[in-house]
Image (cartoon, rainbow, N blue to C red; front, top):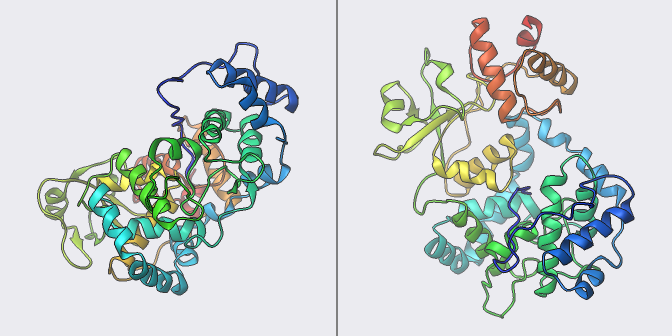
Length: 393
């Protein structure tokens, strides 16, 4: 699942501000829909199409419930990755690699995206297309646009969905998908379908729900459009030496691969890429847990989903599907439960750190804040919050 600020429409429609009198979120739902309709007409959509698009729209409490219920993202990397990477998904991945070898080869030749990356998202998003979601897409998008938690993310997707409807790629009454409005086997939002959709099977239409070729080629197209570099790595498991300056680890610091090797970082299997490619060292569960070297392509994956733990798991699973061994789990220090994490975030926020909101999730902002406060307190600055850190604060 990916939530993005991108909301590309065709160049002819451009980007037009919402009508001045339209409510940005909240309030009476019908009045809010009227504001969306006025904005759509102002953007150049025929009023008859706009009326048809919104005719049966309704607010869905189940969508809001799903939005609030994302506890899986609070699980630490080892638990999270073991939950998502099952033997069944590994076996299905191998079978799909053989069954759709020609599609994967074409995706790599055309867009430079390897099969492991595409299969990892395909597996995690919908179990290779088996479970694509049963939420009405229009209802989901409008409900989340009306909700005042993240309207700036979802209102543009409503406008993109109108365009997709006018192009014949969405039925307001029948199209279903994930609770956040994503559609198809690899769960793409309307703006991404407009910008990166590919007719992979050549039947004259883009069908991400039923065509494996369309779904995989579209996913590869989106990643390439977001900056994926062909024939370049994304993640490699490494071993870090004792005494490494842990303040250098994390997404914020990039050194060359050669720099890291001079500091004693070594691959756990195979060999690292040569040259002066920039790279970072990430420690999802601290210096006693797994360690990965990440490259520019890894950062592109956040365009699909902004969860740090999810994307590390995707990147790692992709390497497994390409033949890498199981990571060395190590012996990480215990982490924090939901209440403790919220308490930590509140304490950090009160000290002026930007943790990205008190939500109990160890996201990228919270990791940076944790690493900085650890360094100040003379603790191992690996970005992994522990009960001892909470006690010290």
